[in-house]
Figure: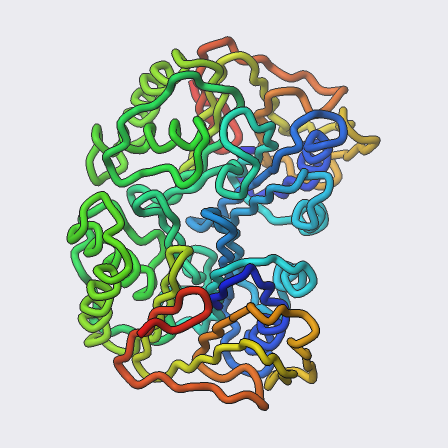
Length: 249
Length: 249
């Protein structure tokens, strides 16, 4: 989720969490990270999301955030363990970076000799460390600004995606980078808001009752969360950047 | 907390959390980090611990861990904000490091030109980044083993403590480093276990009912949590290292 005003993710997370063991086979852990100012609230659990007391808390406790990354895991590489749960968090350039991956990378074993090293043993965390290492190598000790960063990330994700499926989300707390390898779609909710019905649970929300006309909320997912809204598909190989709830051209 | 078998911290946290706004003046946020294998569960909140729904969850949900670092904040430097809540987490050498500080450092403004940079604006996060930067400078890309690490940390905390009060905890998930500048004490609970009564709430636990004879749990705090146990005070300037629930000689 990427927004222009702090927004809670309770509605979307409720449907999403059902995929962690109930309506889908992604039951090997889950996680979510909320930026709040420069800080991050990071929740991970190696239990299935449908059985997790922490997931229950998040469904009830409306944390407001401009950028949220959530993930439900089906283990392909790396055992079921806390250190292998997405999203992963690292600090670079005095800000936190949050990363999640859907897919599977084959024979992806880059040399990681910089300051970013995997703690677990997933292809995903290796990809994240590689991305940060290459960005730091290219730009040194300073955030280069969004246009240069976007161009560099576009190059790097293309290199990684040669190794397999690499649908991914990356945020530094101001922008949300989303790369589609095989499947990703998004929606921008904005004025005039309407009602939305979850695909994974019998639940609807009328967003016009809980928003102001200036609010803008982009939701990016692998599979649409609602049945009565128009989701836009990414093209394979496409990287989009969302800022303030809008995809940047 | 540092233990030899995964132990929950519900009892100690219940008393500790009361200091965040009820029995003490530390009401500017709180946080706790649990190692679970190589992974970390990290909870921070800029609300007072007594009012926090996440603190409520932790009191009810027994997360078992070998190393836990918890902190309740009284803001001295840096505003009340999520990014300024302890403990702080960084990755180095392929493992997570967790750090919390009690005290106040004056004119501590080291050059941080390595890969560890503060996200918030506390003296504490600066000290943590400085520590990691110096360790990485000294030992390069490899964990040097406990004896060398301990000697290096002893040097570094002495340098930092020249700037003010620096009671601190640092863990890499295997050992707990605790430095006393003005106040710190510890207890090792082991067989034969007895009952303990919290200082901050009317609550007792008979540990002999919830432990096995092999369990060992060290609790290190600024102020004793219980009224009927014998806590051992650190000497000012002392660094202790706890492994498997025991202070190392």
